[in-house]
Length: 116
Image (cartoon, rainbow, N blue to C red; front, side, top):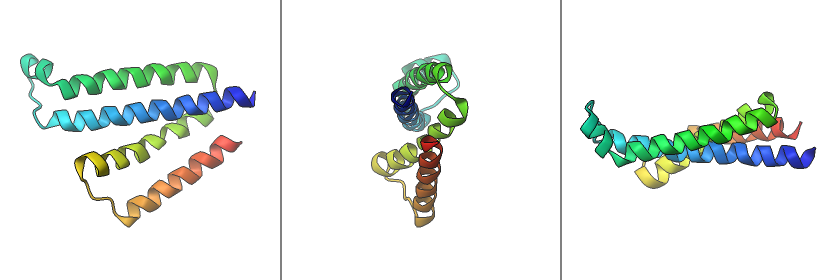
């Protein structure tokens, strides 16, 4: 039982991680975004973002089938953490002390929920 729960928790973190990379790609793709088909199809950042989001969603649906929603869904909140790290590292966005405190609280909450 514990082994299966750990596997599902790790898959939930993986889903959040992949979805966060998708967010990074959406942000990059937004720089050249246009509302015409040619522009959309040529925007490889958006296309990669959609593919990553789709893959993340498939993982998420699998873990929902196997696990408890009340445990899995809060773990998806780690996507906020990954997205903040990616924004800081790849987009050079500033992250202030309040954001770091929020990340610490998210980690605390996810840890507490995962341990039950």
